[in-house]
Amino acid sequence: MAMVDEPLYPIAVLIDELKNDDIQLRLNSIRRLSTIARALGEERTRKELIPFLSENSDDDDEVLLAMAEELGVFIPFVGGIEYAHVLLPPLESLCTVEETCVREKAVDSLCKIGSQMRETDLVDSFVPLVKRLAAGEWFAARVSACGIFHVAYQGCTDVLKTELRSTYSLLCQDDMPMVRRAAASNLGKFATTVESTYLIAEIMTMFDDLTKDDQDSVRLLAVEGCAALGKLLEPQDCVARILPVIVNFSQDKSWRVRYMVANQLYELCEAVGPDCTKTDLVPAYVRLLRDNEAEVRIAAAGKVTKFCRLLNPELAIQHILPCVKELSSDSSQHVRSALASVIMGMAPILGKDSTIEHLLPIFLSLLKDEFPDVRLNIISKLDQVNQVIGIDLLSQSLLPAIVELAEDRHWRVRLAIIEYVPLLASQLGIGFFDDKLGALCMQWLQDKVYSIREAAANNLKRLAEEFGPEWAMQHLVPQVLDMVNNPHYLHRMMVLRAISLMAPVMGSEITCSKFLPVVVEASKDRVPNIKFNVAKLLQSLIPIVDQSVVDKTIRQCLVDLSEDPDVDVRYFANQALNSIDGTTAAQS
Image 1: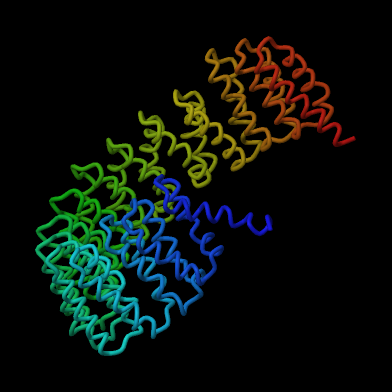
Image 2 (image 1 turned 120 degrees about the vertical axis):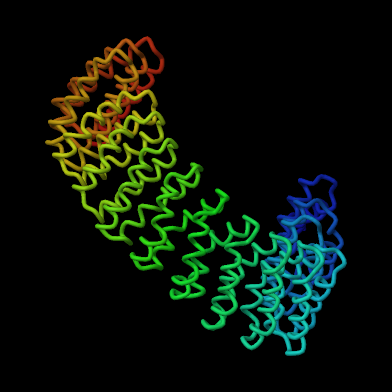
């Protein structure tokens, strides 16, 4: 008997916790509703648990949010699709609460449940729920109703469909701006379920009302509707009904609406097609690029490459490029940064000659911008330009600016340059690299910022992989090893870090002849941090060198370090010695 009672005890606790005064306990129990439902069984869940939850809608917002989420996946626990309608009452009450995130989650769950319900249940239970919410006295209910019309509409009779369209039209003209906002936001979803014959006659009439709303928060949501509705309409209807709205919105008195147009422009262009884009939307886009508000210019600048892809190069050079030149010296650093993040993508669109003539001067001015993010955005996309204009021109025009940035006062800019160096090296070739960038790579190893020194050490490893051990032996290794006598212990430490990264690339012979003597000498350093890093480095060299070298040189060095006065040095030395013993035991 005890075996049967045992699993029921925690269930009883969970049910008690649903009524507990402590919010955390109630939250814990709500999140385990599925466990409670399994224990109760389908019938008791329908008759006891769900009614209890329906009465519990005045709880804390966090508990209600968890409940709304759980109920969305509750169909299996109430007996399957034929009983799905029993889940509607608690979700309906959650749709009327004041907290927005609870209502939104309840609407999501209703959509999930409604999309699985049988048509008869939709008509008998779901549609009446939509109508009750749409007629609710409190605005929250009407806001929630807007999000579930598209689910209710699909399985209805023609009479009910007419009623639902009429109700939605009333919501689009509601006294409360929050309701009209919800109607504007969900109009695209509702329109996808409405028959094409009613699109122009009814849906577009609702849309026109929303586009003329006196609240800019409603109009800006209607901008999203332009793209959604444009995909549903025939091309000629789209040009007649959607295009004038987009053009008007691009000149709207509210900057938020203009910002939305700039942000959605590519999708809007796809909706109206290439011909209208060239004739009507190019002037609108130019206006947005020259807008008085910086936020609008930021959104427009960020779309410049995508927009130019829709045009031929001549149109882009004639209309868009003059604006791009103006934006490259815009008073707002955020506008310049948005432009810098995408402008490199214009090079393949315009082609080699136009890039050299028009874009290179803009790249150079942005590379010398006073704001580090602008410079970073240009550096990170240089490969797109290289593919178009070739490495010779790139090195003549942009590389002096890059070398200048390698000593930039902002460490993140220097870091971006370091990370770009291996790619630059592979594109420029060994000769150019030796002349221009070799000295910089050594300079970075002694940078004031640790992240730069660490990136510089990784950079040496990547260069050795790119150009081969022989080149690295000639151009990198001597300069690195010279730093071992640097008076600053942090710089001596970077020598050890560089050796640990380069040794696997350079191979056993160079490691034994060049690196190991330096490491053994460093084990006698006066700074404990150097000595325990030597111990860690020697441990990493064990798999690279021959066993004879391990026994003759590395072991002896580690034995000396294991008797060091510093506890950390002794710890890492003993750890490395154990590693040698483990390797020897495995081999024997």
